[in-house]
Structure formats: structure tokens, C-alpha cells
Length: 187
Length: 385
Image (cartoon, rainbow over the protein chains, first blue to last red):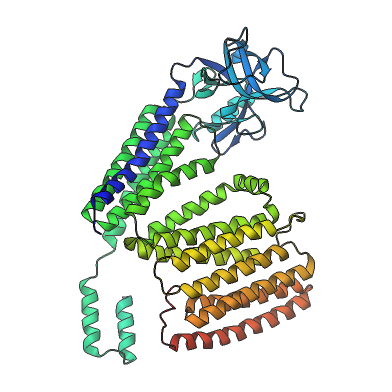
């Protein structure tokens, strides 16, 4: 194979691409959570008979609604207090709020996402738009070694599992860590 | 052992003389290498690798995230450097193996980042990213058939993992009339185009030829399954015309890629196979949802006609393996047809007798025809399958 200078450069660039891309992905995630306020939010398994799907816990956030939204919609979740009882931040939903808008009055943080109204069947729910995988749920990775213990604890103490949620100024949210009974699940 | 056995056989048949047989056997013996050190060494290396993986797995939660990410990036970097060094040094197999290792490591890196940062996305997003990041270095550094096959499998896996997203897109475009058909047909045509483009680069010509064979086999398999199986799932009232137009465009793209691709001798037969496959696929769209005995018969007839056409093309150009497969496929389908059409124990027994006789007859006819193809001088159009 004749190796011209262009070919050598192309091969070097093609080999650097995946390594640089992986490094950029890590950098992007660290940047997204850097300096963002973090709050603990309780999560609950969606189906108590089938908590874990493979390596993932299919969960929904457990908010302390003040009050719960009547109808479903897209907008901002106004976090009024992050120190609610048992990691349930006090929240209300402001329909139509858009990222970049000023926080509503009395709100410590604003999260942009999708809400389900309490009239729409399964009760009120809210999930940040960038974490929504459908049906107002998130997939949380759980390692195989901790899965049986985790499943058992969640069945006995449904509010034992919490996540550290970093909320950025643009209204997006990043899951930083899972906690079981307040202790980090992994380092 | 095998070489010695074959040499003796050729000697007994009078094809080679005793002196030549002895020279062949002596040459083979001089190149013989004991397998047991490799087997033992390989087993040891595998045990060490599994042991490391088990220890890491058992302590996975106790390893800080930054160490996991650092080790992953270091492994990816080291592997990328290894590919480059082996590529520059002309160490072909080491280059191919390290490229494949990097291919796997990049996927594991994407998965690791997804797990540690709890990223929320469908698995196909990660697979698409994986292919986007890896296809350039695989295209430039990996030219063996093995790598080509693994890349093709990765592409097809990614395609089918995105089934729900593709179906959503097809629905928005009004092309859901023959969804199962289009989902299977498009990747085969896409692979044919990719194989033709790959063949434009001379060092990868052999890989491209292999990819072309693989994609044609995928196309034939897809059309066979689609025309043989009933896809009735609560009925289908959607018009398949939109899907047929998309499939026609994909077929034209594949045909043009073959026609104007790199010089390869079996161009016309490949175009004929493409045409026959598109015809079978299109007919499949209309009989896939037919019900009852009539539906079974229509599908069986379509399958048999499709394979007879393939057999005829193979016979014309001397593709023995495809011709033999066609004979076997037609025979098996006829046998299945007996099961589908006849009920009751006595009737099934009679059906089995009839089907068995039919298969024996087909085997005899096929054997004669295959021998005739074998005895014909090989034409310059018969090199692909």
C-alpha cells in the first residue's frame, strides 16, 4: 500500500476521532454539571412488579406538589424549596415557561420539561425534557452486583432511592448520582 | 493429515505421480506446527482476561468513576496508537486485530459514559454514534473480509435496533404499507451500495467483493423470508405502493452502484438477481397478508418461483453453491407445502411420502445439473458466489 502524506494524515485523524470524541463527551457532561445547584429528589419504580429492566431501573420523580397541575403540558417546574420532607422538593408547574425565561416568583430553581396533569389517569408527574424517555420516566443505570439488594430495599422502603439532580441555569437537569438511604450507590 | 489424505487420494486417482505426492507431503510436514502450545497458551490468556474481568466486575461499584473513565480513555488511545504503528509497519493481521479491538473499545467507552452520567437515550443513538466514530478508521486501515463482515453485522444491528424510530419516520412519510418488508429490504440494498463504493479503493477490493456476496445473501434471505412467511398481525389495510416506490429507488441505487462500480466480472448476473429479488419482494407485499389455504399456496408459489429464477441465473453463470441452494430451497418449500395443505394423520403420512419422493427426485435432478455445471469450463462471469 502506497502511503502518501495525505493518507497518513487521514489515518491519524480517523484514529484520533473516536478518542477525542469520547474525551469531548466526558468534558461535555462535566461542563453541564459544573457549578450547577444540586438537589436530592426521590425516585420510585414505575412498575413495582418489574422494577428493573435489564441493567436499568425505570423510575419516575417523586415531587411534593404545591399544587399538582390539572392538565398535561410542557413548561417549567418551579422548585420552591429543595429541602422538602424525605427528598421531595416542593414544586409547582408553570405551563408555557421556556428555557432562558426569568424564573417565576418564589422559585429557587426552574426545570424545563413535561408534566402530566392529575386529571390524566395516572396522577401528576413531571420529568425534565432532556431526561424524558417517554411516559414521564427515566432509565437509571444500576450495576448488576447491586441490583438484587436495590430491588429488595426499594420494595420495603419505596422512598429510599434518591438522585442528585444538578439543575442548570438553562432549565436542563443532569443526574449526578444515585443514593440509597442517603448513601451514594457508587463512587 | 488432511493434506496427506488428499494427496494420496489424488495419487490413487492418477492425477499426480508418486514423486510429486511425496514432495507435497514432505513440504506440508515441514510447515506443520504443533497446535497444543497455541491451545494451552490461548486458554491461559483467556483465563487471565476472564479473571481480570471478574475482579473488575465484582468491585465495579467501588472503583471511582474518574478511574473507570481514565482507564477507558487510556485503553482507547493505546489501541489507536497500536493500529497506527501496525499500519505503518505493514503488520497486516496485528493491524486488523487492533482495529477490531478499538472498534469494540469505542462502543464500551460510549456505554460507560452513558452509565456513569446516567444519559437518557435509545440504544440505537449510541450505536449510530459508534459507527460514525469508527467507520472512518475501519475504512482506511482494515481491509480483511473478517473486519468487513463484522462492520456489516454492526450496521445491520444498528438498523434493526432503530426499528421504532424508522417506523415512526416511515409512518410520517406514509410508507407503512409494507413496513416489515421495507425494514428488511433497505439495509440489504444499502450494503450493496456500500460494497460497491468500497471496491473503488484498490487495497479493499477483496473485502468489497466479500461484502457484495454478503449483501446479496442478505437480500436473498430477506426476500425469501418475506415471501415465505405470513405477516398477518390483525390484518393490514395499508396500501403498499409507497413502500414499493422506496424499494424500487433502493434497488435502482444498488443496481447503479453495481453497474458503475469497480470492474467486477459478474455484473450482469448480479443485476438479474437484484431484479428478481425486487420482483419477489413486490409480489410479497401483496401476498404477505393473504389468509387461509389460498394465502399459503400463493406464498409457496412465490417462494418457489423466486428460487427457480435464482437457480436459473446460477445455472447460466456457473454459480454452483447458489444453484445447489436453490434446488434445496425449492424441495424444502414443497415439503412444507404438504404440511400446510394437508391435515389429519393419514393424509399427513401420504403427504410426507409424496414430499419425500419429490425431494429425492429433486436431489437426483439437482445432482445431475450440478455435475453438468461443474464439468462446464468456468466463464469469466461466474466468479462471485
